[in-house]
Length: 198
Ligand code: 5GP
Image 1 (cartoon, rainbow, N blue to C red):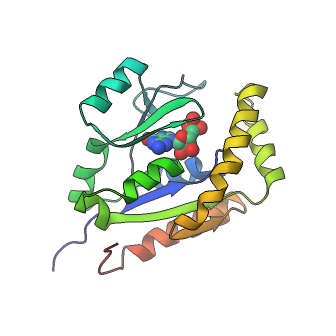
Image 2 (cartoon, rainbow, N blue to C red):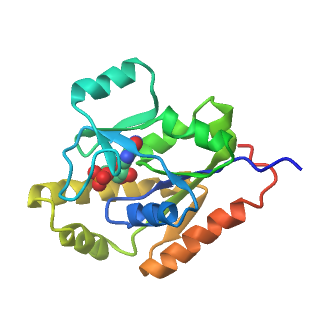
């Protein structure tokens, strides 16, 4: 019997939807490998280079664009973010699942890819916060961002939420435990699929 190939579990949703927590937990529990993104934004307190992100200067980031190292990249909240192809392909080819926490622009690029390994592995899900009020509460509650940053993120989040119909799956966020249980079940269900051709 041929072993199953890896799933590329692409997760989007506005800042404050809780998607990063879901993705990290999936990876911490050994269910999937978290693709570490590159970013030009500054680290938040507690964030580590090479664990949370690869923190790059704009020049370094542009160098990687020129070298064709990104599967996708986009400008989000005024900074560049991108996924290195190297963070994804080998893992998928080894039959392991990869979880990708990226914005709606990046998701559109991944969907449009010609790379068959990526195309056939893709499962995309949008995490919806329960309400605008709850979203604002979560963005403010983070406590690490200035008022200006929170205002920009809230505006962008509301715009980002318009994109959910482009995804195959949508998870309406409830409690952390409910969200995680459903998030993990979907991945487990998808592992049983025989063919995933888009
Ligand atoms: P944060 O700055 O809060 O860590 O992330 C901001 C936004 O950038 C989130 O919506 C996150 O999903 C998105 N993001 C993180 N990494 C990437 C990436 O590699 N590519 C793209 N397109 N978006 C990313």
